Length: 125
Image 1 (cartoon, rainbow, N blue to C red):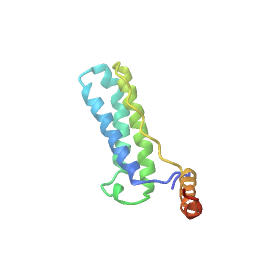
Image 2 (image 1 turned 90 degrees about the vertical axis):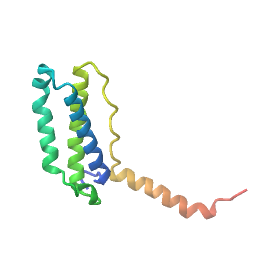
Image 3 (image 1 turned 135 degrees about the horizontal axis):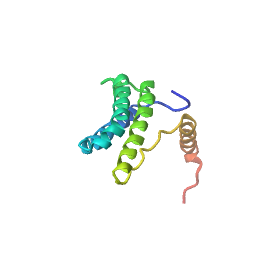
Image 4 (image 1 turned 180 degrees about the vertical axis):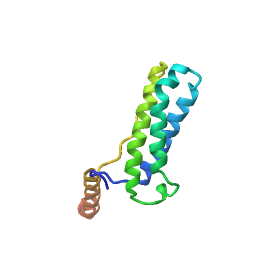
Protein backbone atom coordinates (compact mmCIF):
# COMPACT_ATOMS: atom_id res chain seq x y z
CA UNK A 1 0.00 0.00 0.00
CA UNK A 2 1.16 3.48 -0.75
CA UNK A 3 -0.22 6.64 0.83
CA UNK A 4 -3.38 4.87 2.00
CA UNK A 5 -4.12 3.44 -1.44
CA UNK A 6 -4.22 -0.29 -1.98
CA UNK A 7 -2.08 -1.11 -5.00
CA UNK A 8 -3.93 -3.51 -7.26
CA UNK A 9 -3.22 -5.31 -10.50
CA UNK A 10 -6.02 -3.28 -12.11
CA UNK A 11 -3.87 -0.20 -11.59
CA UNK A 12 -1.08 -1.87 -13.59
CA UNK A 13 -3.49 -2.79 -16.37
CA UNK A 14 -4.98 0.73 -16.47
CA UNK A 15 -1.53 2.28 -16.68
CA UNK A 16 -0.68 0.02 -19.62
CA UNK A 17 -3.85 1.18 -21.43
CA UNK A 18 -3.11 4.85 -20.67
CA UNK A 19 0.40 4.48 -22.14
CA UNK A 20 -1.00 2.80 -25.25
CA UNK A 21 -3.51 5.63 -25.73
CA UNK A 22 -0.77 8.24 -25.36
CA UNK A 23 1.44 6.45 -27.89
CA UNK A 24 -1.46 6.06 -30.33
CA UNK A 25 -2.24 9.79 -30.19
CA UNK A 26 1.43 10.63 -30.66
CA UNK A 27 1.75 8.29 -33.67
CA UNK A 28 -1.36 9.79 -35.28
CA UNK A 29 0.27 13.24 -35.39
CA UNK A 30 3.95 12.27 -35.71
CA UNK A 31 4.11 13.76 -39.24
CA UNK A 32 3.63 17.28 -37.84
CA UNK A 33 7.09 18.68 -37.06
CA UNK A 34 5.84 21.26 -34.55
CA UNK A 35 3.80 18.58 -32.77
CA UNK A 36 6.81 16.26 -32.54
CA UNK A 37 9.10 19.05 -31.34
CA UNK A 38 6.65 19.96 -28.60
CA UNK A 39 5.67 16.51 -27.33
CA UNK A 40 8.40 13.97 -28.19
CA UNK A 41 10.64 14.60 -25.15
CA UNK A 42 7.74 14.25 -22.71
CA UNK A 43 6.22 11.23 -24.45
CA UNK A 44 9.63 9.50 -24.53
CA UNK A 45 10.26 10.33 -20.86
CA UNK A 46 6.90 8.96 -19.72
CA UNK A 47 7.35 5.83 -21.84
CA UNK A 48 10.85 5.28 -20.43
CA UNK A 49 9.59 5.65 -16.85
CA UNK A 50 6.89 3.07 -17.58
CA UNK A 51 9.35 0.68 -19.22
CA UNK A 52 11.74 1.01 -16.27
CA UNK A 53 9.01 0.01 -13.80
CA UNK A 54 6.80 -2.43 -15.71
CA UNK A 55 7.38 -6.15 -15.84
CA UNK A 56 5.26 -8.85 -17.43
CA UNK A 57 4.77 -10.14 -13.87
CA UNK A 58 3.49 -6.79 -12.53
CA UNK A 59 -0.13 -7.66 -13.28
CA UNK A 60 0.19 -11.11 -11.70
CA UNK A 61 1.41 -10.06 -8.24
CA UNK A 62 -1.52 -9.18 -5.94
CA UNK A 63 -1.21 -5.85 -4.12
CA UNK A 64 2.05 -5.08 -5.94
CA UNK A 65 3.39 -1.66 -4.83
CA UNK A 66 4.84 -1.23 -8.31
CA UNK A 67 1.28 -0.91 -9.57
CA UNK A 68 0.86 2.32 -7.57
CA UNK A 69 3.97 3.75 -9.26
CA UNK A 70 2.71 2.58 -12.65
CA UNK A 71 -0.67 4.17 -11.99
CA UNK A 72 1.08 7.50 -11.33
CA UNK A 73 2.97 7.11 -14.62
CA UNK A 74 -0.30 6.18 -16.35
CA UNK A 75 -1.90 9.36 -15.01
CA UNK A 76 0.99 11.35 -16.47
CA UNK A 77 0.42 9.59 -19.80
CA UNK A 78 -3.28 10.44 -19.65
CA UNK A 79 -2.49 14.10 -18.94
CA UNK A 80 0.02 14.15 -21.82
CA UNK A 81 -2.53 12.52 -24.11
CA UNK A 82 -5.07 15.21 -23.25
CA UNK A 83 -2.47 17.94 -23.86
CA UNK A 84 -1.70 16.47 -27.30
CA UNK A 85 -5.39 16.17 -28.16
CA UNK A 86 -6.01 19.77 -27.07
CA UNK A 87 -3.05 20.92 -29.17
CA UNK A 88 -4.61 19.44 -32.32
CA UNK A 89 -8.10 20.66 -31.40
CA UNK A 90 -9.58 17.29 -30.46
CA UNK A 91 -11.68 16.56 -27.38
CA UNK A 92 -9.75 15.14 -24.42
CA UNK A 93 -10.39 11.59 -23.29
CA UNK A 94 -12.50 10.80 -20.24
CA UNK A 95 -10.34 10.43 -17.14
CA UNK A 96 -9.62 6.96 -15.82
CA UNK A 97 -11.39 6.26 -12.52
CA UNK A 98 -9.07 6.72 -9.55
CA UNK A 99 -8.53 3.81 -7.15
CA UNK A 100 -10.42 3.59 -3.88
CA UNK A 101 -8.27 4.44 -0.88
CA UNK A 102 -7.97 1.97 2.00
CA UNK A 103 -10.25 3.98 4.33
CA UNK A 104 -13.10 3.96 1.82
CA UNK A 105 -12.53 0.27 1.16
CA UNK A 106 -12.71 -0.51 4.89
CA UNK A 107 -15.89 1.56 5.26
CA UNK A 108 -17.61 -0.24 2.39
CA UNK A 109 -16.44 -3.61 3.76
CA UNK A 110 -17.75 -2.71 7.23
CA UNK A 111 -21.16 -1.76 5.88
CA UNK A 112 -21.41 -5.03 3.95
CA UNK A 113 -20.40 -7.10 7.00
CA UNK A 114 -22.90 -5.15 9.12
CA UNK A 115 -25.69 -5.89 6.67
CA UNK A 116 -24.82 -9.59 6.61
CA UNK A 117 -24.77 -9.79 10.42
CA UNK A 118 -28.04 -7.88 10.82
CA UNK A 119 -29.92 -9.56 7.95
CA UNK A 120 -31.47 -12.33 10.10
CA UNK A 121 -32.94 -9.70 12.47
CA UNK A 122 -34.66 -7.64 9.79
CA UNK A 123 -38.42 -8.43 9.91
CA UNK A 124 -39.91 -9.74 6.71
CA UNK A 125 -43.50 -9.23 5.64
